[in-house]
Length: 230
Image 1 (cartoon, rainbow, N blue to C red):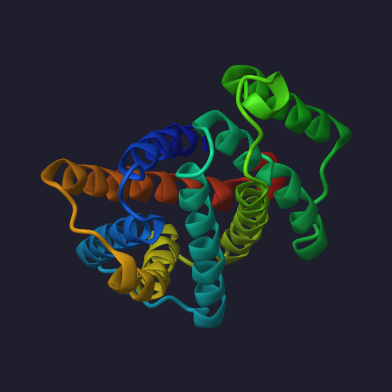
Image 2 (image 1 turned 90 degrees about the horizontal axis):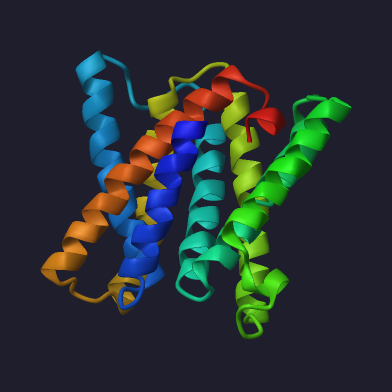
């Protein structure tokens, strides 16, 4: 989970940089296409079928993940990086609530205290403008999208935790990337821009680091309760 957080932070930085010109859905598509290719190669090399056992739940995880990623990539182009990060990292709270409701996972008082402490640490490290008065007033639409993305992320993580009982972690990542590819094609076809050579490199890097982060995240959620892991 620590490794996943590290690679997701690199992803955020790359999306913030590439999003100065490229539309969010184009970045989602690039990330998803790279994810499909890497996952397919990885699974075939290991002799594992990419199609999984619980296709409806894999599809749901893909839809939730696509919505969450679309929201986060959009927010990274509309809000300061620190503010977007803090709002996104409210998702452990929602994960704990949903895991208790749908997976019967209970959090001990110590876990709740550590969760709140970790959120406080994120706030102190990033010093978001909306709390420290360092930036102008934030776009309320972007803030709403950011909160919706955090909730969708939490729902996706709970689904990953359930799938971890029956599915290979890379199969779960493959389905997520496959659904995200299909979902991001229409918007990219309508409003996509031709990347510059430097942007092509950034898009490829986004795909690779996010793929690594997703695999690590999925493996972590297989091993540990969702609320505590997040």
